[in-house]
Image (cartoon, rainbow, N blue to C red):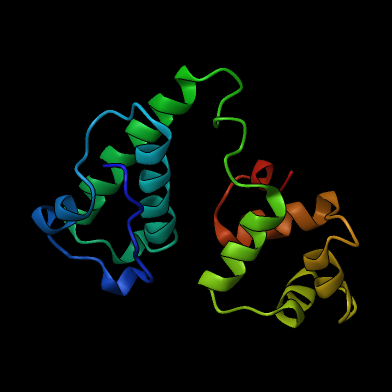
Length: 144
């Protein structure tokens, strides 16, 4: 599957395995397009594990295994970070309907730091990386 899957929210995902397979067939990943699609599915589902149906849990596990196998087979792991760190942060904020001010509050800093980070004027610190990784349930390496 070379086209990008468009999923906006976890609530939009099918609850059954067949419906999920219509979005992305679980199979070994061989190219960047399929990898990007699989990551998008995982990112959409991440953080909702408590709400998974049994079919969603199985599907998530299978897709995660294929992503891990693909990343392990590539030199340097996650395909030399297909998404730049700032873009990854902006994407996660948009997906969670958070603003620059919300980012500042999340990081526990003054109200202007979030905007400065999003404009590229300031860098994230190690404590910021930990806070963001915990909040969005991702690896801190995503923001480096």
